[in-house]
Length: 77
Image 1 (cartoon, rainbow, N blue to C red):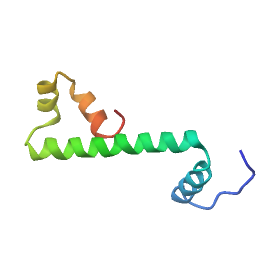
Image 2: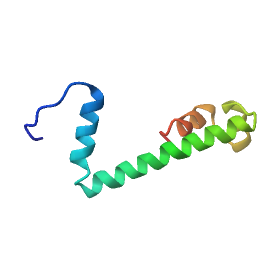
Image 3: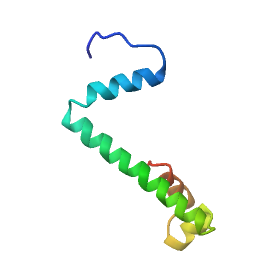
Image 4: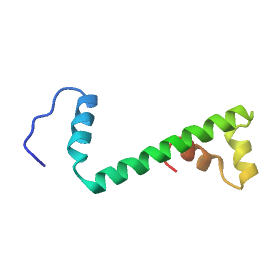
């Protein structure tokens, strides 16, 4: 890792890491894949809630477990 000094705060550190990582193809691909999982999870939660279903009810209808639905909705697929 470079000898750059970090600015204060976790948000600033994240911005610096993201900026440095954008030069790496693997980083960009991973970042885009993670972003897609987060967007999918958010969409799933909104659709489930608008349908009036709990995570447990959706899990039962889809043959999943409630924790699996929770992981999908949180973006950890």
